[in-house]
Length: 270
Ligand code: LIP
View 1 (cartoon, rainbow, N blue to C red):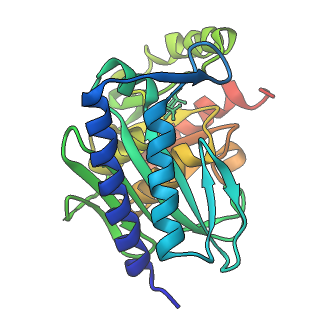
View 2 (cartoon, helix red, strand yellow):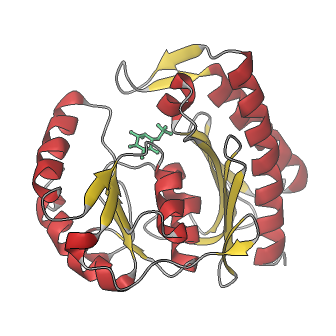
């Protein structure tokens, strides 16, 4: 039976290698390979190549495990473990050369469904800043080896809150209208553009809270564990597991103030 610490070592090693590859491909020049849900929802050749690098490395070291990746879909598990991968989270930032993108690699126990899975280990690597965020279940969260702890005792009016928006223009308009209200109730809002880094920012105390609707499992699988292991509460609607309908992350005392405010807005969304 492989320990969570051993699984984390595999995740972090592969994420670092993939991040170095993706950064080199960025410096070589970015080519958009396709658009997905909308013209603004792009995928670059590097997204696909980086995911293949990760998939090949995992197939070699963990051949019986399952795989769920943003670009190449799923592969069934014979071991009960599944690797959940976003090869380049923050693709638009990557395309524009904004240094806020990361390779996110997590391993979960159970189905590749955020509603039921248990995340065992995760790594989020931003090669541009040289930052590797890591966590294993019960093992704590770290940034380049240093322990992370969320900031507590922050009241909502003084909270720095991260969020994000969907790729659909009409969805973005509705989300922006809500942010237009909320911004008067908190310290300020930040839109970093990569859910994995938003969640790691909560873990590192660079954000007091983060919420977003419309995330894919690979966007938050690793970052949510890192935030939780740093002391944050991460949950979705009705306080259940975070999923596409909603993710809210904050220290428990701030979570109790922010979650009801955000949930009221998103509760009746499809
Ligand atoms: C991104 C998320 C981000 C969200 C963006 C996009 P991608 O993932 O990490 O939080 O606001 O719209 O979905 O597409 O760069 O992997």
